[in-house]
Amino acid sequence: MSLSGLCEICQRPTVEHTCDRCGNLVCDRHFEQRLGVCAECGAEMGHPGSPERADDRSDDVDTYQF
Image (cartoon, rainbow, N blue to C red; front, side, top):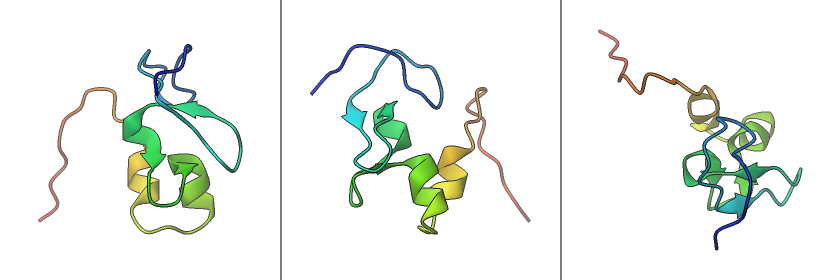
């Protein structure tokens, strides 16, 4: 379902979800489908992988660690 507004995490215009925990409107990239929450709430809840998703990298460059 498409909602009107901007993603409250990255400000992209493709809002598709509402966080069940805090009510934030978020894009698909910042929504934890399995939990039904935004990436920020997922990070607060200690869900593995959420802090990385919540850290929006506006340049969309992959980071490699060696």
